[in-house]
Length: 176
Image 1: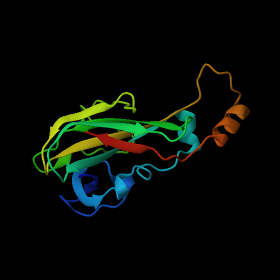
Image 2 (image 1 turned 90 degrees about the horizontal axis):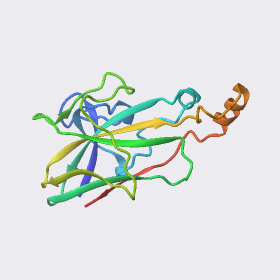
Image 3 (image 1 turned 90 degrees about the vertical axis):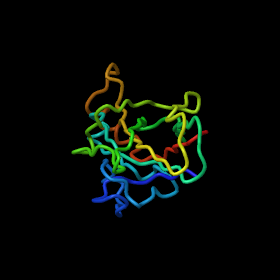
């Protein structure tokens, strides 16, 4: 069984329940509820929609079952139109079960390449994950903005952004 854990605790397996503080460091003992990303990021603000901001969260994926080969991941968006897109990247854990710690939620981890996996284009996280092994996973949210080539007046842009969703549910699926 695969289980996602928050990061950001003050010590290995310390308690850390706030998804917004899951920006790397030690693996916490706090599991991501139902392995769901639904509350990993806050709602999308008008400012974020206008400027196309991004944010990043660090998690640890633990294989609490038997060995797995060819572990792939992808996102499932429930709606055709979304206010953001999610990307995924991996980082090897250090000897003390940590991933790098970000200074801010809008920073990106060094040396991590991000991919946008879909059901048609699954991303290979790792070719082999033994029982009780773990890997660091980074989820990056990029807020989508209107196409800059579209001619939108300030008034129309405000109405456009106000009509867009600010909360959405996206599923992360693991396939092996």
